[in-house]
Length: 345
Image 1: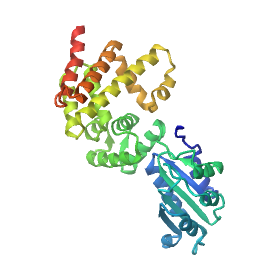
Image 2 (image 1 turned 180 degrees about the vertical axis):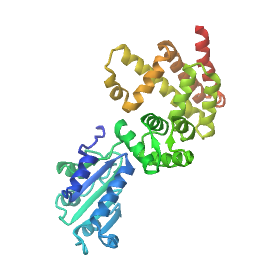
Image 3 (image 1 turned 30 degrees about the vertical axis):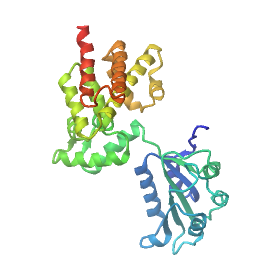
């Protein structure tokens, strides 16, 4: 089977610039992982194009419509407005096995000028699909991908500013690292941290570390940090934090193994003298994550990384084959990792 291809198109900034210049009409596909930014774009479009009080008459939201219903919604003339806005979710023919019918693939090329038709999709569409190809041919595919470090930091800082709080670059980076890069999740974290700050106008790194709800991956990173620094009590606390949050022992073990494999890849990149600016692409992570992996890799030897991978793999095999109960498997692995450090002293 051929690999799934990601469709290519313009980025969200280009799209919104065209919209603000009044150059957007017809059918468009808004895809990508950043749902919050896509929702914000659609809200701005609706607010701009739909007269107040007439939104229900000129704005239509459809879910998995058949072609007849979609065409009817687009062909209806706007009422006391210049444009109609039709948004479509779960449209057949953007992902999965099913294809859109030929009539729809032809129609998206001839949507009337009074209609803006927006197909909304979380994640990437399948570039092999007929409907996606028809939209891509028109250069009507817009990518709402995750924000990169500079944009995301500015967005976080601006989010706190709207709530009357000051956040510097280091605190913004700490929040990115702890909570991830998903805009929806970060919006909640920004609101929570602003509330926790109370009358204090400044969002400190310490407040982010203690107040943000960390992802499991971030907690595992802290766990490995504790291991490479020889902080056994701290590592066990991080392990219990993960278990209390509902993570399974095998799931944590898998994340721990992934972290050690990532450190091994960093070691290999350094050994092969790969330019640091190429690390993010080689590791498949965001630019802002590379610094943390480099810091951790510098604190551990290549031998300990290899042994850490071996310990995790052996324990995973023993648990899955029924030789060892999943209870206590993490403590055993952590003790093995600390024993490696002790053996060198």
